[in-house]
Length: 326
Ligand SMILES: [Mg+2]
Image 1 (cartoon, rainbow, N blue to C red):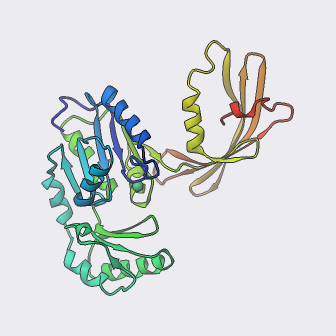
Image 2 (image 1 turned 90 degrees about the horizontal axis):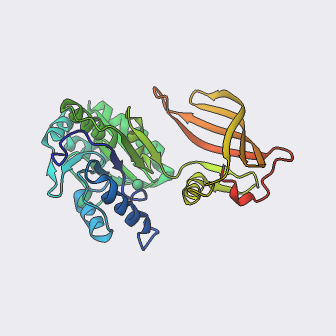
Image 3 (image 1 turned 180 degrees about the horizontal axis):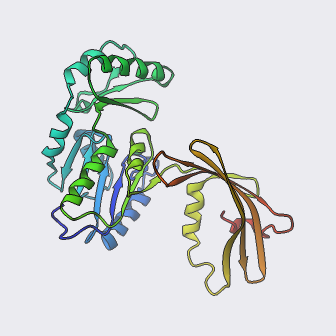
């Protein structure tokens, strides 16, 4: 943190597995591309934060396996450990926060009563994280019963279930979101609040990153998109295609506009929005009736695009449907 004199221009807080690291990409092309971008344009005035469920041991393994950059801050063990810089200096202030109303021994005693909970390896058991494997079919009843037992022992804990396999028990004030909130409080106290913050993640233990006020979020995978041709694709792929078409309308009179926008709330956190989306390139005009399902989180004014469905308006189909992204 001491590397920058003033507030960071951008702070990226990213999960590692299946967010920063694509385990299905043996050549690590996306990661290397990100690295080049970061070093060229952001390293000198921005902050890179990794936030991972991994313990220090298996985080270091991943750093040996993948071409990961050195982050300014590493949040490990599902937000229960914060460390700074290349030498990974621990944040003892955070350790003290987590010690409040936490008793690891009681967690061990109570979780031992559930044979469905299979302990993870010793390296994954940390001072403020007790970790298990739990099969999905049993998960709901086990989590409910465990929460009740720990409540009876007057413990304030947080139970996080990720990827349908891993169950972590943490102090209530821990977690990726709380660790980020703690960092932001520290920056604010120093008068060095980052000018922009972006959080990125993909699974259960990332969800609370998106509940922190004043940060922007990218969740992968994003929703689904039904193209007017009838094919279904992931929204993330459409965004990829848009990136690749950068500049392809240069020199043309290109414009996009919306018509007949209407919105209806269909649940406590869900909205259905309809509009005609028009695009024109010189003489050519195309239009789609577009229906979007948006969800919102409590006490927040940000929306997540869950599903987009488009159908051509009569006579306004694109001749070349591959040039219509969404
Ligand atoms: Mg992940």
